[in-house]
Structures are given as C-alpha cells and as structure tokens.
Length: 632
Image (cartoon, rainbow, N blue to C red; front, side):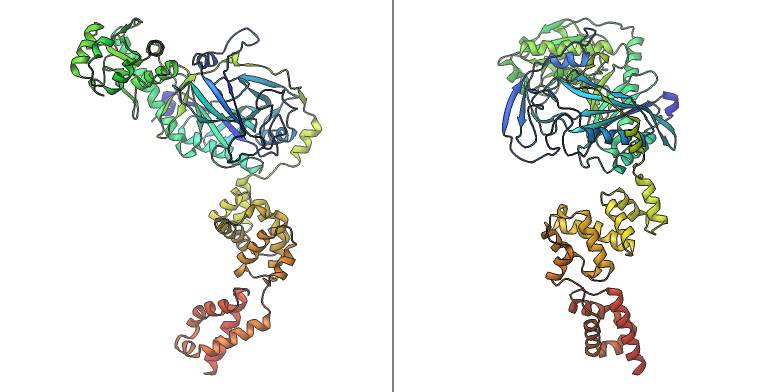
C-alpha cells in the first residue's frame, strides 16, 4: 500500500504506570492485591459544564446511559480520596521527579509551573466524574529510521479504576478501586508517523526509554497505547487502550481498510443521489407475533419490535468494512451504546436467526422498502428500542459525510468497535483543590545530572565491552536485574556469563520452585558474587547457596554459607577424589584415553557435591589422565 498516497497519519498517546511507593494524590500504597473487597458503595455520575458553560460531547453520551456504578474498596490501599469523600493530598513529588526525568530523556521542555486540571470522565472509571491530570513538558522529539516524531506533551495523571464487570447494555457496572490514583505518565506524540512499521518501531523506542529509567511498572496492563489514526479524506479516530505491540501494525492496517470502505459507501450514496434519510420509526410487533425467532419471542414478552427504513442503504449495511465487521456492525455498536440493547437485525442479512422470508417480505411492505433500501429492526423494551434506532439513524446520516471522529475499542483480532465520540476541549477545567507546583532550575539540574543510560546503549556496551552475545546482551539490558549485573561487573572479576547465568537462569528457576526471590536485595547478591569471585563458593553449585540466603534474609551471606557448609571443598580433598576416581576407572581410561574426561567429570563433581570449580577439576583430571596414559 502507498501510505503517502492515502495520506496516512498516526499519533500516539502512551499511558505508563510509575513504580512509586504511594499513589499520586494520597498516601495509599501503590499496590494491587488479590483479595476480597472490604467495602462497597454505589454512585451515579453526571457531566459538568466547562468554564465556558459547555458540556463535552463524549461525557454527554455517557450520561444518557444512566448507569449505576458499584465501587469495591480496600482498607490497605484505598482511602477517602479514592472514594471522592476527601480532597486530594499534595502532588506526589517522587512521581513528579520521574515525569521530569522522562521529559529530559525525550528532549522535552519543562513547564515553569505544574497546574493540575480536571478531565471529565463519567464512564465510571473515576468516582469523582473526572480525572486529575497535569502538564509537565512539551516539544520533545524521538528519532526513528523513517524520520523524527515530535512529542507534543507529557503529563502526569492518576490511573483509572479497573472495571470488574459490566458491558454497554448493562445498567450496573462494577469497578475495583485499587488501581485508581496510581501515578501515570501520559506521552502524546504529534501525527508524524507515516507507516504502520514506523508506528511499531516508535512504540518500541518509547517503551525502551520508559523501561530505561527503572522507575516504571512492568507487566500486562501497566502500559497502554492510544493510537490516533487518519487518512487524507477520512477523519481522526482514537484507538483506545492498545496493549499488544505485535498488533499495532494490524490495527493501523485495519483502520485504513475501515475508513476506505466507509468512503466507498459515501461515494455510492452520492452516486444514487441520496443526501438524507427519514427518521420514521415504526412499531412492527404484529408481524412477528407468531415468529420462530427466540430473540424476538423473548423481547415481545414485555417489549416491542421497532423498525427504521434506511433509503438507499440496500446492500450497504451488509458490506464488510473490516474482517468480520460490516456497516451493520457499526450501526449495532451505536444501538447497544445508546439503548442498552443486545443488537440489531437488518434486511441485508435476513432471513436468518429464526426470521423467515415471509416475515422479511411483510416487514419491507410495511415500511414501503424496495431493493435499494435496508430495514433495521430492534426487539426490546419500547424506550430502549427507540433510543437504539435513533442512534442508528444518526450514524446512518454520518455515512453521507464520510467517517465520524470517534474513540474506538481495539479487538483481539486487530479490528475495532465504537466506544464514544472523540472528546473536545470542553472536558478540561482547572482543579481548585491542588496547589500549583513551581519547577526550579536546581531541580532540573539535579535530574539532568542523574539521567540513566538507555537500554539500547547498555546492550551495545554489553556486546562490545563485555563480549556477551546479542541475545544475552538484550535480555540483561532490558531486565530489572541490569543494575545488579552492572554492580557485579564493577566489584568483581567474575566472567560476565557467570553473572548473567546466575541472574537470568538460576534465580528464575528458584522462583519457579517456590522460593521468594524478591527477598534477595541487591547488596546480598553482590556479597554472594564476591564470595564466588574469591572461590569461597562454587559456580557449579551456586543454586544451593542462593536458595539458602533467600530463606534466611536477615542473616549475613557469609554466615549462611559457613553455617550451611556450602563453601567450596579444599584443594587437598579435590586431589584425593580425582586420584581415587582415576584409579577406580583405569580400564575406562585405557579404553578411551582423553575421551574419558567427560564421563569422569560427572562422577567426580557428584562426589564433590558440585562444590568445586569445574575448570579446576577438569585441569587436574586431564593432567592425571595424561600422566597415566604416558606411564602405561
């Protein structure tokens, strides 16, 4: 595909949780526990007006749903701030320092004063009906192979609550409050990205820079990307909450496909000179009184079947615009959101779902629909059905204009579905409960003097300076253990591969075996490496002392080794064991010569409980065998 020809533009918003001790506006621990909630409460949220008296369109649509929200609270890590029963505490200064550090790594210009703003959010993800956010810096830049990408703004904001249950059509939605208020950095780029590949590479580089600080959380859900995508004749859409880097290119490709398909539909409507559709909603319940459709039967017990004719849409509603998604799916998304219904039926796909050809014929006759028209039906309670069809009519009218600006939800297969209209400027207004924070030149100078090395720089150093292969260099550079690796390299003469294997192989193996590896501090590991460097413990048996010092976190490492008799075996003992094995295996040596070294090493190391240096044992064994072969 020629991306220049279609005018592809992509921008990003990254949302990364920061690894601080406490939350952004209170002293609650920044932790998530798998425990039952200690209390619950219920809220119903309403939109508020901006300073200019305007109500944000996205918030207004959410408000029409009139949903109740149940919030789960926890005594350990939620408080009155999360419940919106107490004003926010002063801004977390550690979180602010991390945001300033990231700003410096991205070459952005820091603001003189940090002002906290309120961003209206009434989907239930925040108990207050707004999210607190503060602009930290602007005008940064990242270089990619395909060109420079600007960083428009970097903000510090509070994370939202986690949805536990509830969908578009549900009247009650449940949220867990543990995540609410976790410090989050938002990085917004300019729409300088011109290809899906560049988008993927850009996302990888931003992620690398964030991880290089060692001060961000890791794991599923700790970083999310919003993609802003448009083509020249289309419109900007926001793809909200992409987590899989591997799917970024697919999401962009499929959004291009969706926008091109919608533009084709617009052109087809223009070709048949359709400029408007009548909003006439008709009760057609009588047609389906004897229906075999289970869905409609259930709906008619306390509801109705309503219908809307879309003139000129015959064949277009069933048109595929993304894999497994049609224009009718777009209409259905709007119907679900507005009316809380399960979905829609349309004559481009009928007869189906128990609806017969005869019922379709009667339906079309009732609405005076011909082959060029499409009839949409909704079966549910009357008010919900009416709201759903009004939303379908509104979305159908937008087909004459092209592509509506909206926020969309990414799906697992790379496609997306409608969430809400794009928010506008009316959603932001000042936060009066949090004082502004001045950023001094001294503070910036201090942060600049302690900027971390980037992971990509560390990888190159590990390859060229330490001789690690590319895979090992990449793994340790990206790992949180890189700081320990660097310290061990500085403070010992150990081979880098030995340190790597201990950190990246033995520790994960012990964790899989149930050991609490997190009990191991950096200093205790360095103490262990120093003993290994002095040959007081054996690299062949490193897992045993490792497991012991994990189990005894409050005891000095050297004492753990001594009391557990985990140190290396003396040279005299090694010589005795090697001599005895050589004498016992004389026949094998005579038969294989130097080829006996391998089998005998296993026997000797087992007798030594693997508490001797393998290289030392091998050298001694080879000398003994050569001498024996020469003598014989």
